[in-house]
Amino acid sequence: MKFAGIIAEYDPFHNGHAWQLAQARTLGAQRVAVAMSCGLTQRGALPLLPEAVRVQAALACGADLVFALPAPCACAGAEAFARAGVRILAAAGCDALVFGAETPDTALLQKAARVLCSEDYRAALRQQLAAGARSFAAARQAAVQALCPGSDVAALLDKPNNNLAVEYCKAIIEQNVEMQPIALPRQGADHGQALTESSHAAFASASALRALWEEDGATALASYVPEKALKLYIQAEYDGKYTNFAVMGHCELALLRAACAGQAPFAAVRGVSEGLEHRLENAVRETASLPALLDALTTVRYPRARMRRLAMDAALGYTAQTPALPPYLHLLGARKEALPLPGETALPLSHSLARLARENETCAQMAAAQSRASDLGALCRAKPEPMGGIYRKKIIFLTN
Image (cartoon, rainbow, N blue to C red; front, side, top):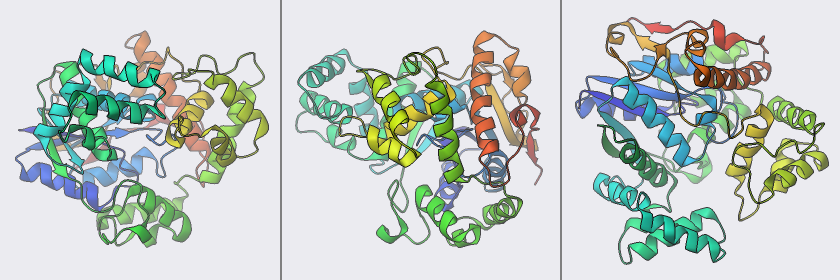
């Protein structure tokens, strides 16, 4: 392993992320690249902090290159999120992918991935769904259990980071790329675990840190983030460069209400099936806040995380025609000594989104989708910013 890759949101960058970067070095990586969520997060929301702050934190704490995981790919389920991240890092030339998992058994995770790639699994999944499984996740796990009775494979899918780890391994197989998966033990709190539920003082979950920031401000994160990152966060708070999530909720709902002026407003939204477009339209018309909208949409069959992503997709106009995979490498930041590293890349490479948008129609579509998310983020900050900032941003360099 010479050039390791990590796929992450880094929102906010915390001690667990810094540990993962350090582990990649310990395992022999000479350089580490990050595919970082840009504009949106996997939970279907704006990031707490803008890309500039998160990129600086990542570089200051050990990353060499930071590429944008475009908003439509970042705001996606585990399978699509993993595929997009692997595509970026493979195109950049990474020969290894480092990730955390509750069960850091790379061979077992790869075995599960091979099962999910098989036609037998697809047939078993269809059978479970047809039999009325309570959710896709339950059908998926039952299908794997039916194919691998008595093994530990199906049990992997009970844990969120294991689930994502399996998807990383599956994406490597499907894309047929020369990339070694390396599973690390997940450190600290579980995914989404509140501080009161966890005994891990130094390694808090990102969602817990966002909640702590909202309650007590950036300085409250001191025990949970690297010192270099904390300085950036305190400055971002002072400058008003953080998301006001109450404003985000109002803005997102306003976009959804505006869409309801047309006929069948959500029929083309990606991921819509089984009449979800009607369910979403009714909820938009009948609720007065984003939490109430999500309450109205969420059921056992339709988990809240999926509904958050669906609502954001609908607000930003992401349809089945929105590119599913990144068509370019958008370089957000780099250590200067690492810049020669990408060399000949498998996708167009630039720090300028405007330049990438001129490459071809697919690139233009993805850039426009990214811009819509970034413009929403700029409006929803504590100190709002004008439109179009994503096209004016310069690459962030770290020289020491």
